Amino acid sequence: MAICCSELALDRWRDCENCQRGEGADALPTALIAETAHGPRVETINHAARAEGVRAGVMLADARTLCPMLQVRAADPAGDLAFLERFAVWAQRWGPWSATDPPDGVLVDVTAVAHLFGGEARLLADVAARCQARGLATSAAIAPTAGAAWALARFAADGTVLPPDDDAMARLAHLPVAALRLDADVLLVLRRLGLKRLGDLVGIERGTDGRDKLQRRFRTRRAPSANPLIRMDQLLGRVPEPLLPVVPVEAPLVQRRLLEPVRHRDLLDRVVADLAEDMARALEARGEGARRLQLGLWRVDGEVTLRELELASATRDPAHVCRLFGERLDGLDAGFGFEMLRLRASWAEPLHLAQADLEAAAEAHGTSLAMCLDRLTARLGSHAVQRPVPRASHVPERAQGWQGPFAPQPAEQGQLAFHLRPLKLLDRAEPIAVLYAAPEGYPRRFRWRGQLCEVARVEGPERIAPEWWRERGTARLRDYYRVEDALGRRYWIYRSGVAGDGRGGSPEWFMQGLFG
Image (cartoon, rainbow, N blue to C red; front, side):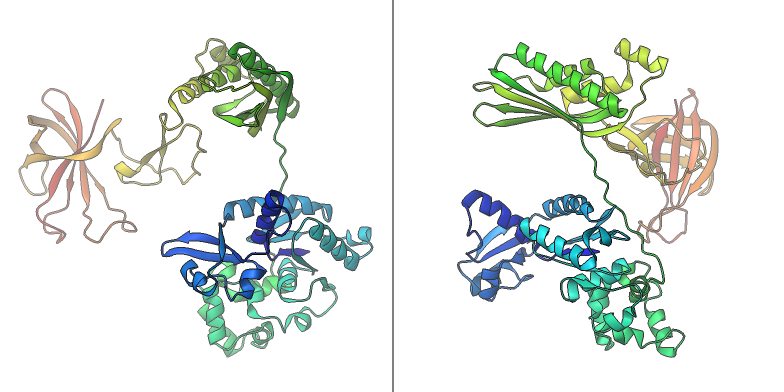
């Protein structure tokens, strides 16, 4: 079953405005706008604005010429997507699992459950009634495949049911090609070819000359939204269409409602300690540990203060949590006091009941790396602590990057095998002056940072080619040498370019790193 929320953004806006100003918030012409490089653009309009001649997709300046009294509100695509995910979870009342279909749709598996509602017709009637009660303008349809249900929900009458034993193409042939969920540029190509309805694509049989031409035109397009042939096969059930179901996740939450408001710091720390104990018990019951904790403090005057922590590793140690929140509660304005405190674990990971002895001993002495990262981040901020991460690049300065201590590890991109490389690389390769016997010979002497170094031993070269997919055509080859001077100091230098390569003047030499 496909459910289309045709006015999702407007329904969210109406709900918010009606809650704040009462009924009738939709009486004035209103548009939801988004900022673009060329200025504000109208994304969605209500019925009053449509009656004035305003259309979605036009620039705000053009819309105001048609409707000077047009009211504008900022569009919220992220909020719409979050609402759609919550709506998909709520829609699981009609089936065992559901999936989002951005930007305005939900797919629900209703296989063998329609009889619980009295049949498909009554199931769709229940969907319409419940969505209307929530203030959502929706249309729904049931079909054997997700693609057919999507097409019927948007381009057929509301409540359409396509039985599995019917001829699908006979019922879908009159629908436009936009029912295939294709990109705008692909739809434009199909219309220029005279293919405007699904029946026009069916008429081009497999193996005919026309079909071969259509196949060749879209052969290189692997994405389903860019290939009408793949979408057609998905609609008819010839090839499977993978869907990612929405899995509801309940975040552990504990709270304290206080009989008397708390103003003093020592009492506040005691309440936070109680919340940390409650959270530890809640997480232990789930076999999890917290990676992100959010503490909310409600003042008597209604003001809410939020303090958030991100942890280097999953934990449910109350003492550690209290110590970290103690850094965040300094200078807190209590006003007339806090009457409620709430602690929520918005990110949790599996954590075994028994930990390794080594890590437990380290935590007992306060020397755990994860605890050290947590304390540094709590004191200095999340942007002051970083860690190196490997990158899939053979160019030395691109083989490593930096990210925050709590950012997820990058996906494995394959291990690249290198020759011996120094432990210390310069942030930027520094130019050096090198004397060598021949244009392709070993370096004999070089000057770096005003100091002359005599080369005693040299090993190389190791040739590293530029990354042609990101470099310009003038990028030059590099020949790396591991050299040792007369004092035993070891360097990693390279020659940029080869004499006569036609990509610049004479080769240049640079210092890349130092061996320990």
